[in-house]
Length: 112
Image (tube, rainbow, N blue to C red):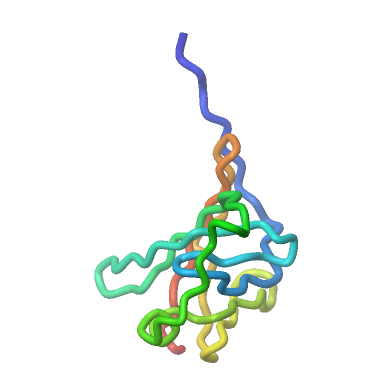
């Protein structure tokens, strides 16, 4: 028998996401989020998905290339977008929970 996936659109977003290690951010509730940079037809997007990673498995990154391309922090701004540590605004494209997997896609706004 096929199980149906439960998909819920979320309107409550993490208030703050801080870099914890290579490709890993942590929110204000100490939940870890992995990220993947997407380049879709010239629009820079970042896919974040919540995944519990024990702190002992997170290696802090000192690679300057990573810190120069990705922000060290995102802060929720006006409820539907984030302001990053580089002063850029990111639109929340979607924030969903499919079964136990929470995913959010942020898109760099053109005027940032």
